[in-house]
Image 1 (tube, helix red, strand yellow):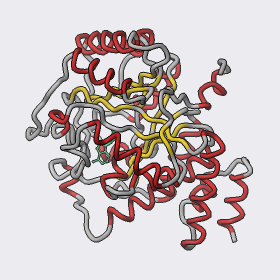
Image 2 (cartoon, helix red, strand yellow):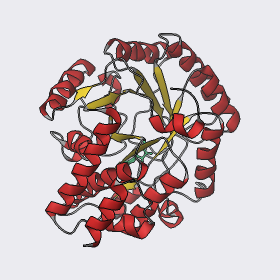
Image 3 (cartoon, protein in one colour):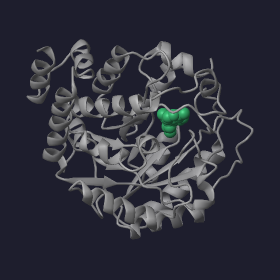
Image 4 (cartoon, helix red, strand yellow):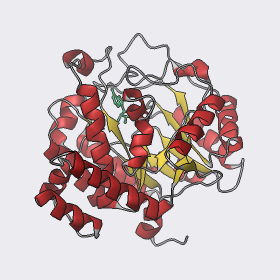
Amino acid sequence: MDFYRILEKVVSGKFADTGEIATLLAPPDETAEKALFDAAYQLKCEICGRMVNLRGLIEFSNICTRDCFYCGIRKSNGKVTRYRMSENEIVSAAEKALEFGYGSVVLQSGERSDEEFAGFVERVVGKISALAPGFGITLSCGEESLDTYRRWREAGATRYLLRIESSSEKIFNAIHPAEALFSERKAALKRLQQAGFQTGSGVMIGLPGQTLKDLAADIAFFRDMDLDMIGMGPYLPQTDTPLGQQYPDSGNMAEQRLQLSLRMIAVTRLVLRDVNIAATTALQTIDPAQGRERGILAGANVIMPNVGDVAFRRDYQLYNGKPSLDENSLSIRENLIRSLAAIGEAPRFNSAGDPLHFFRRTGSGK
Ligand code: 5AD
């Protein structure tokens, strides 16, 4: 059957075109789906063992100048209380991540492109990178100029996440206001690579109007862009957003999106191989007990546990149903260790967990 022939082909490292990738995203039955997940998990284990790289997630500000139709912290959502953590609060959260043995942090925020913000992030990154040699710093703060990216890179951040959201320009335009340009998003990803960042991107899965062919094209896009890291997850309608209101969920749509997301993870692992792939919070939102663990078993190798203060958690809800709203970071850590042990996995403590792909792409040591 076509499916198994193509699966064998990608497992052996051969090139698959978009049509073949789409076939892999639709296994004919449960046995075929299991074969897909098993092959992806085996490759994940070959690349990084039965270990998961952790990044402490610090959602340091929900102030945003963008108005993305799907996102709960879009600027027009007046129901959100806006906050920005202080420099000291952010550095303390990073110290906690370090103490917890997470080996790296992700600083994520709403998007702002003013000088005050650029300088603020630059200072905070400088302070965090002085905490310990080799401690990894990832930024996820949106589209910026090459100059700003360079400043943040020089201050000590080594990785950057900027999702393309969908590699279909048509879908991208349907979920963003007119001032958001697909070409600009793509150019920003190139600027990140130019500035020397390990560069990550990703998409939302199960967007209105999105087909398997679109998702297959997303994976081909990741490959064409030579990305080092992938973060993707199910789209979750947010009730205070235009997209969430226009297309409310019905039936078992969430479960279907979760399943499709797991397939996306597995196929992305098989096609891109040595990249870091995150099992995202959105998976956990649909299946609180097992979502991220199912992501690992489908080939993901990164989890980003929250290390921020519970006080800010409620105001950083990109979608409804965000898990662990009241759970402190210590308890999150303990539960994560326990649930990983239950699937025979363990955190890789005290390691920055760099993606092998970056060193191959840039020819730098390691
Ligand atoms: N559902 C799922 N993911 C979302 N994001 C934002 N809003 C939603 C939503 N409603 C994702 C986007 C963004 C990342 C930070 O969160 O992909 O890039």
